Length: 110
Length: 112
Image (cartoon, rainbow over all chains, first blue to last red; front, top):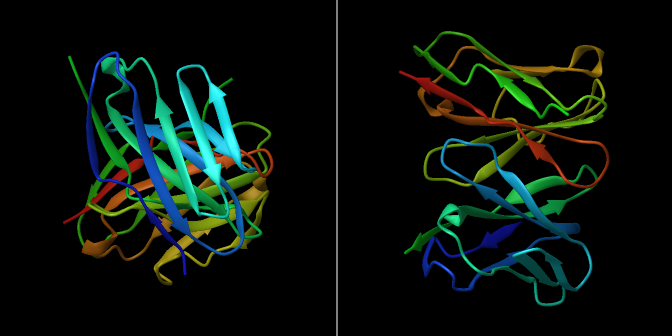
């Protein structure tokens, strides 16, 4: 079966750096997505990792190790607007359907 | 470019009634996915269309759920008859190929 684990909640300070970890056990792995979701809104794409290594995009970076079944999302220079739920999702199978974790609710404090 | 849209944003119905949710994907996106988030749980896959064809409906809970995508454009998801456990947020996503899936804002369904 498929299983994705990520912390339920995290708290960080404005201007700091936070790392949100995600571990997965799946077969037929195609890639790993990170989405940001504010309450009541659509999940918004942040990053997509297919190969091992670090992908950097502005203040956000995402890392993948396929051999370890491990990814993290790194958020730098945190802003209050970064308070949201961060969803780790594995693209799986021939149809690339997404298998989601429960999400990590990040609270950024002043 | 317009994003994925879903209608209605909220729906409250009684057990036993029928509800139809609609999703309009981004123009030109052949792939359309339906997902559902039940309160306290993770988002779960329901089914996948490529154009008008169902490619994978392994996530559909039971035969009370019927999805269609006539003409390969917008899609509908009908629940008939609705049960209490069908309550949740129904998301639609579209993608042009095997990459990023763009999500709609979701329809919050409450069955009382």
